[in-house]
Length: 142
Image 1: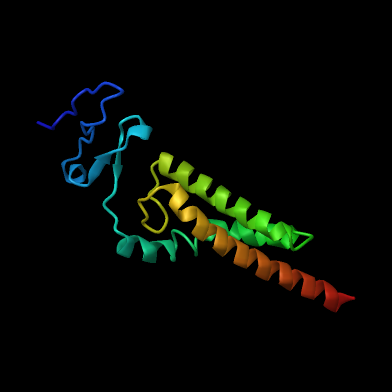
Image 2: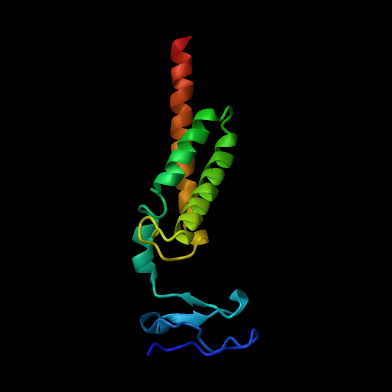
């Protein structure tokens, strides 16, 4: 018979509401999440390779959106906006895919805000590269 979580009052964060026995050992109660548990099982040595890989810096959603926004940017100052917009949209895509049951790209189980700076940097670099390519191709045509 599966273990059922104890019903806790909203102010009581001392009890874990985690019903998965394997995750219960790594869960801690965080009061500003309404008493829900957060999985803190990933160590920095496990998460950094993921953040520099497909989950973060090399995320294909962020890179594609950053490249498209970099192509249409008409000034270098707009590349920062393009990088931030691409990172935010890629996080929204990942969250919506996770809500529909599709596993996270890159195998990262942390919060979406942890990958945001890495996706911003990746999207900013690719937007700058695509912007430079487009400017160079326009100069050569004239």
